[in-house]
Length: 236
Image 1: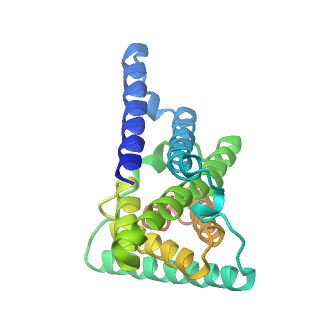
Image 2 (image 1 turned 120 degrees about the vertical axis):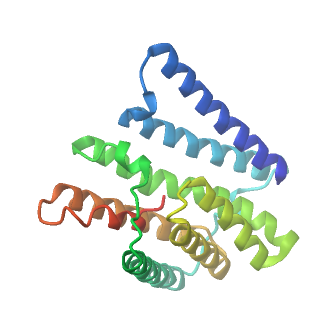
Image 3 (image 1 turned 30 degrees about the vertical axis):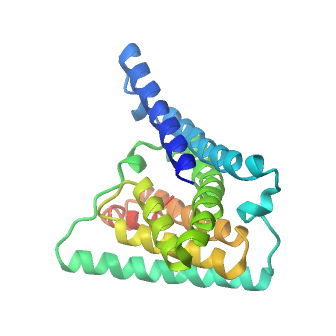
């Protein structure tokens, strides 16, 4: 378990160093380029899936079921996904209201300001954020990490530990609570259904709705002041 986390962290660090070195060599801020950033995020997701698969199914010569890729009771899974999605939005809406009431400004996640949200670029971003990321992150954080920790430190401890790492990956101090709540809901959903697919569905729906809403607000001249505060709905 620790070895897998170390390997994933080392590969991701190496990728960042390669991009940084290339930026220096070319004299260009590659991470500021929306196309390069989207590609980097996809590669990052492929890395965590690869690590989970190598230290899981490949290492123990078992199928994808060990990572939670198994059938589930669809009425239960879909209804729980929808209920938790709505509840997470209610919690994040209340979080925004409290922040505004306290005079706190919720800053934009820097990654969103660099992604391409226009035309074909938006569609590619949507695929990366609402399809690739949910699949990859659920396999690693819930299917691999949570499941592995569950047998060692129990359900509650595994949920908290895997969710903390999931939240840390998104590197947003101001949005720690909303992202942490989403991560907990994803773990609860996996535990309740025994399958990773409902968690992927919830994660994908959350990212897709949030990104589309952000796109609409950014494109609208009627709601310019809401776009900054709506960003706490996006956690990918």
